[in-house]
Each structure stands twice: as C-alpha cells, then as structure tokens.
Length: 204
Image (cartoon, rainbow, N blue to C red; front, side, top):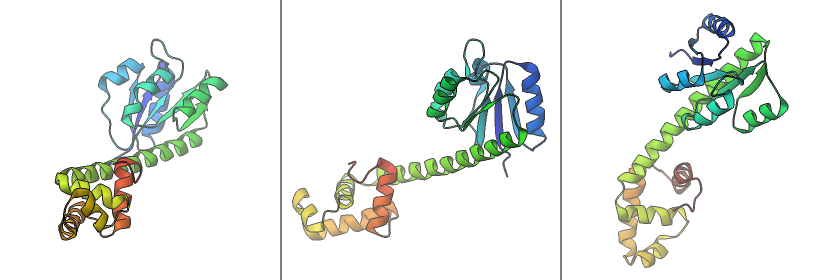
C-alpha cells in the first residue's frame, strides 16, 4: 500500500524539521520545503497527498500557494503562528481542510491529515472514473452521440427519429450500440454517467 505523502512548507527550519520527524514516525512520506517557490519547483502530484503550509512566509505566502495549487486537487492544511480571522476565513473558503494554530495538537493534526488523505484518494478515484466515461463517450460515432444526448433528455425513440430524420428502427440500433459502448445497462445508469461527465442531464 502506498504511504500517504505530506508536503511541509514552512520557512522556520526548526519547526519544519520537527514536524517532518513527527510525521515520519507515523509512517508518512514527508517532503519538506523552505518556501512556496521551492515546493512548486519540484512538485509532482501523487495520491494520496496533502500540503501542510504556514501562512506567513517571505515572497509567496501560504494563501498565494493555495491559489497556485487549485489545479492539482491536493488538499491543504494551514498550520501557523500568525492566525487572523480574515486569513482563516479566506483559507477555508478556498477549500482548506483545516486551519490550525501553533502550537498544534499532534493528534488533531494527524486526524486532519487522515481526513485529507482519504478525501484526496476518493477524489482521484472519482476523477479517473469521469475520465474513463469521457473517453467512452468520445469513442461513440457522431450519430451515436446525437442519440445519446436525446436519450438522456428523456426523448422516446419516435421523437429522436423525427429530429434526426431517421427511421425508428435505425434509432433503436444506434441506441443499442451506444448503450453497449457506454457500458450502461439502463437509462438511469446512462443518466448518472452523463451527469458525471457534464454536470447535469441537459448539458449537451
């Protein structure tokens, strides 16, 4: 089983090293960085992972690093001795797992890291599933995609046939092939797939 990874970003060398030793003692793959710039220069997303970052750092602070990491989906825990209510609110609104003040409670930090790693692993699975479904949809012929959109919208074969100027029998054949390629055993399952790919049933 892959060990969970924790990226520790803190310009206080003593604090960072102490945290690294603590997390390694709990069987985590820990990688420490003195600055946000140094972290980003070598960052390669792994799953599951989490970033533990200080707020107040020279050049790039923790909130700026959080903005830069939005694309990655890696969860962030703020651990700081310079907490203010506006800063904490902004961090949480931007998706931080939690905002802890130094000195921190080790057990609380471990619990939040476990939560972050679990969420990251689950989101990675969901993303992979969505990518697989998009690939399946992309493998459909143009006609099958046209039929798929209308089936998801709840239109019967007769209406689809009129809209596409085809016979109802031809629509039935396209529909059957489309369902097989998508791996959907029912209309309800196809709709769930469509929502996962596009966000809503009528997103065609």
